Image 1: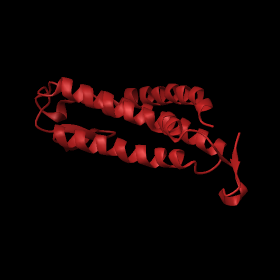
Image 2: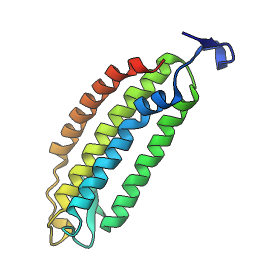
Image 3: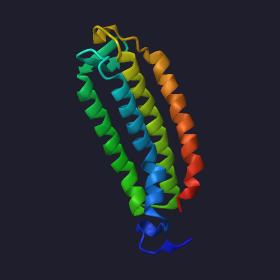
Length: 162
């Protein structure tokens, strides 16, 4: 393994393809954005004028137009892709740090991918967004399990980061 002496704080930098590091790290966010967009397109025309996008313990407390929610969510995935992908592309930090970054990114993609896509499905066919049935007591644990499973996939793929 090639190490570069110019790493900050004496931490080794590791050689390897920037494309592979970026794909292994930020790829799941791009996949989540693609799945979300596919579901959005498939369900378009079935949403009310405003959809529920934010919840507290009593139910929905935030609303957006469907296109606004799509734009916000895809924008969020884009920002997360840059925040996680850029350090991987640049080989910033140690190999251990890059691997942790990739595993955390997979977990985040699983969590946000599940919640945003499930929310789209829950909003379809409603006469009014207040009628949504989206119990956080069900969806937050499901999102946590999805995040854990996704982080396992990320952990298995991090051997590609060198």
